[in-house]
Length: 239
Image 1 (cartoon, helix red, strand yellow):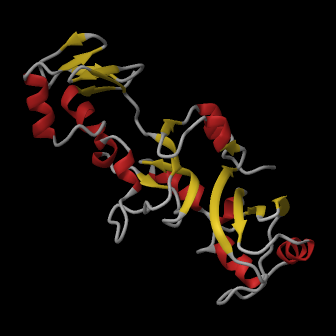
Image 2 (spheres, rainbow, N blue to C red):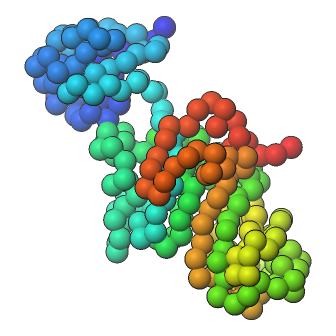
């Protein structure tokens, strides 16, 4: 069992600086598995560790893996320019432990967004070599046609791209609704592909990453959840 001093544990979970965490402990504001401990040097095992800080329970996690149902008009940035950061939708502790989005969704794009403080996970999920499909529901300005779908499946030429880029799956879901599946994750890719194919994206929602579907998580817009091991397994590329 891994053991750390209580002040290090508290700091690692995003409760503030080491000095602040020590003060919390000495003031009796921290319980470990239901027992108040006021010695910040106490060595505590991290397996199944439940902390209580200011009366609120927090399960110790070495890293956090989060799914958020992103609303419109939030930026996927720690330093937003024109709209609030999506980090304002999460507890303050996650900002302290430097949780960040895995990739980005435009401020006006909604849907499934992953966040973590695990650098290796972020890098792996962001790598174009993984070929993890991402599913989008695109509302189009003009009606969806068979010609549009065939164009997207056959490949469209985007500015600054050396070769045409194609959707790996594309199906009509309504008169102005298109489900499109991509692997590349390039800048504004869905919007640019629709424009290149002669239509226009009026609204965009990401409904799935790999086998992880937003609908299965039961999240309203702005809500988030810790991902389980089973959820994380669904993010692996399909064989």
